[in-house]
Amino acid sequence: MTLLKTSFISTLLIFVIACLQYANTLSHDYAWDDKLVITANPATEKGIQGIPEIFTQRVSVPNKNVYRPVTQSLFALEYGLFHHNPFYGHLFSVLWYAATCLTVYRFIRFVFPGTDVLFAFFTTLIFTVHPLHVEVVANIKSRDEILALFFGLWALIVWVKGIESGSWLKLMAALLLFATALLAKENAVTLLPLAPLVWWFRGLGGHKRLAWSFLIPILCAGVLYWFTFSSGRPATQETVVMDSTVLNNIFLWTSEPGKVFPTSLVNIGRYLLLFIFPHPLVHLYGYNQISLKGWGDPETWAILALLAGGAYFFWKNWKNKRPAVFGLLFFALTYSIYSNFSCWRPIPWPTDTCSFRLWVFP
Image (cartoon, rainbow, N blue to C red):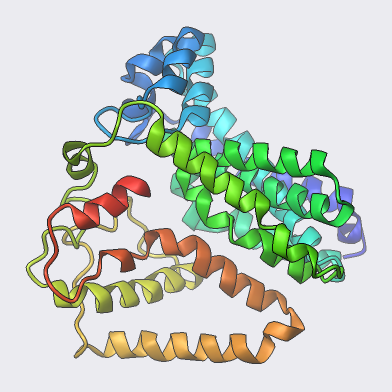
């Protein structure tokens, strides 16, 4: 345990464990959406020559109105150097994942500077070995999730350092990191509300700075709007509907709209349960794999009771800045993008309403 208190030993162990855990993927072939994004994507197959097209058009996923040029540019560079060889794609995904695990370790130590090194180490270790991350690492295409978290967490760290030191250079660097995360995958937008939260949890004073410290998140939201909604081909109703189908959205065109909200509540419990007992893990939680729940189902009320307990825990402990409180907020904010609550309507909705949400955050 004494050795683990040394930051270098802890980071080295985390990096080695992350790499060893997914070393078996190096012999794997391309899988799932790798074909759409890499091996059968005309822009990616052009290699370096395809990067201008990648940044000026929505070609990340054929026939989908998404814009992820940072991730696809890396795929294009790799394809140009190594061609149709999945070994290197898996290798770089493993290395990026290991680097992200180190970033998680650094982030925990940064948010809670007064806690023991062992707390950060074992928390990161759980994150590193948790099987929920298998698809993200083993599926090369899902590197966009890894990059979004990597650059997003570093953006939060640099942003808070800029606030504490009053350095505009660091604030601009944070803006660049946030923009990179957003352009890797738009899910990184859920990290923006965490910026003032991280600063507050560090508890280093200077509360008057909090009012203007929202500048970077606001600018990043503007970057997201500009690149996602204004760059490349414009969104149309056809692309909106095309991006979401009954196959990947159990709520689209449902004949029981009254069950959308209670089912969304129950899904929170399903995700929480997967943290504790990650089985079964499937590649899709969509049509005909999740049964709809109503207000008469006991699962719905069990989750409501659980949420009420979580709210009570938060109310009693938020002033103490306990790590568990930060963890609850982190989960709530980052999970919100998948919650489907924006799909809920008290009456039936037009067929493109819910799919529009999935177009913005697929």
